[in-house]
Figure 1 (cartoon, rainbow, N blue to C red):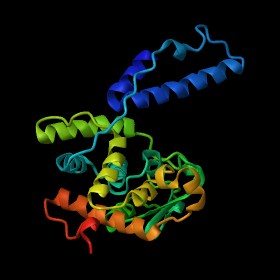
Figure 2 (cartoon, helix red, strand yellow; figure 1 turned 30 degrees about the vertical axis):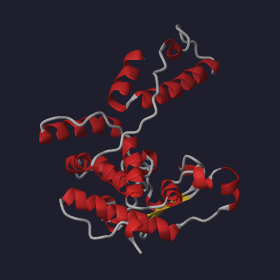
Figure 3 (spheres, one colour; figure 1 turned 135 degrees about the vertical axis):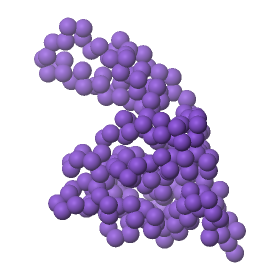
Figure 4 (cartoon, rainbow, N blue to C red; figure 1 turned 45 degrees about the vertical axis):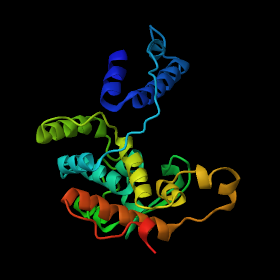
Length: 254
């Protein structure tokens, strides 16, 4: 168990390792309460909780370009590109269902979001272009297995990192999938997107949507979210394609 958690920490970070540890601890506790005798008891209790540090990793233009270029035309590659384009949570995209995809937006029901609030994600043209390759008659989930979605990102990321290192002659400094979400938020702010619109894009309940303000402010900002994600998509594609973006950052718009 300690070796498993150590491997997860090395590949995905201490936070992910601790979350897996908590799930395993709960599972073995349930097993014992169901009357199944484990000779050593709940073995997870003998493992260490790893130190968690607040992360502030924001990927550079060169790093975003390297990650995009290393993505294959498979489930993991498509998921990573959508994460870069939308800034959504990993599980929300990895387990995306076709009945959640509506024309030019994703509509996530409350039971599929971390904060139990339904969430609309407008899709840029770049994001929409990724999905058709995975459509199939009768399929429920866009990626991976029907019912569960794609669950292989933990195995795919080390292979992605290896491709990046081979293509660039050196590996990227340690990064996690969650860093993509933080990068999207930070870079949209750099482009002039207002904080409350970024929160709406990410489906955060803090800040403008937290506390008493959240009770009275029920605005979904759909138009503004679409503008922000279109702006970000154009900026990201300009980085990837090595050209200047054809839009003016919102902060400069008169």
